[in-house]
Length: 164
Ligand SMILES: N[C@@H](CCC(=O)N[C@@H](CS)C(=O)NCC(=O)O)C(=O)O
Image 1 (cartoon, rainbow, N blue to C red):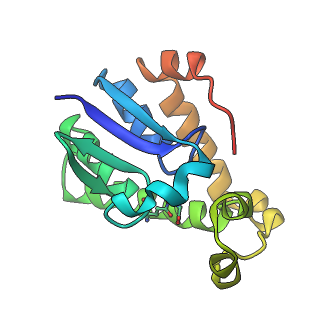
Image 2: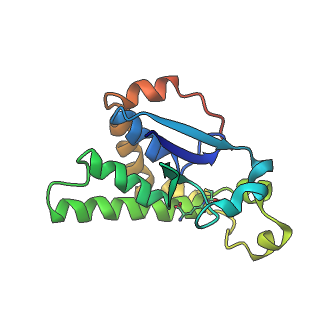
C-alpha cells in the first residue's frame, strides 16, 4: 500500500501542505500529476470533481484540509489538547480563506470552461490589502519555522516545482 496524491503539475497551494507533512513524516507516496489539458477528461473520476485527492488502495479522499488533517493526526501534530487543536484549526481556516482570496485567475483561465469562467466567484485580488495585513507577517513566521524542520528543510531544498 502506497499513498498517491493526485494534483496538477507544479507547486499548488492546496497540495503543498500535504507534501510538506509527508516529507516531515518521511511517509512514502507517489504523485499523480495531471496536466491541465488532460483535466476535463479525468475530472469526473474524482469524488468532488476537484483535486487534491488522496488515494489509498484504490479509494479516494478529497478535500485538501481533510488530507492534511489525516497526515497531521498520524504524525501527532493536531495539538496536545482541545485548546491547542482549536488554535491549529483557526490557523488552518485562516490559510484556507487566504488561498481562496489569492487563488490566481490563471488557474481558472487554464482549466475552466467559458461557462465556469462567467460563473466564477474569483474576484480581482486586493494585493495591497493582503501585503499590509498582519496575516502575511504571521504566515511568513509560520512558513519559516516549518521550512526549518528536519525532513521539510531537505524536501524544500530539492523541490523543483514550477509555479502555475
Ligand atoms: N475545498 C477544496 C477545493 C479544491 C479545489 O478547488 N481544487 C481546484 C484546484 S486548487 C480544482 O480542482 N479545480 C479544478 C476544477 O474546479 O475543475 C479543497 O480544499 O481541496
